[in-house]
Length: 236
Ligand code: ADP
Image 1 (cartoon, rainbow, N blue to C red):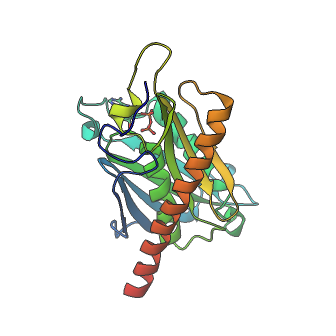
Image 2: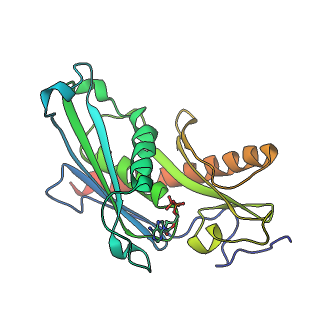
């Protein structure tokens, strides 16, 4: 089956409405909220601060430690609070997605703690979390070579779709035609990909198309992130 429109009427290459707020948690060293429609994530940065216990310190660079979590009421059926295998995995992939652009060698022996709280989830929470985290790091004044931008790309009935909602992620035409979810992140300045995961199946040719579409969407997200940071500078 071929689709002309998406369930919510969006174009195939269109993200949901995006919103950015910076500096929303005054006690944190840096903070930001990133919204993709009904998916809302808050990122806070604490540090760089001396890492304890001392034997965990890296004398060459700071440690970026990410803790991703979804609030119990972020989904319609209450989620059990506390860490899970999924949240541990997502925390690791977010750390990896960001660490290549953060100049950690500027702060040896310290920790940079990144807390990501998903306050409402409608798929693509790790992508919203990465976008918020990039902004929170910049807000904390931590030197970075670029802002990381992230989006999920889906493949539904042979159509590439940007920024999947839960309804799209769960779509299943038959056993062979399930929606494929491909979260990805880029340093758009260098074109370097820092996150690529794949949930589902996709043909190699379509994967290339999906990555190109994801990069294009990340260029737009990067503009939104930069615009929000520029607006903040003007206010200060
Ligand atoms: P992402 O949110 O990055 O797309 P997943 O593909 O693992 O990550 O999750 C997809 C979506 O499934 C989440 O955004 C959320 O809407 C829903 N979800 C994840 N975990 C739970 C849970 N424990 N209870 C209910 N819904 C969940």
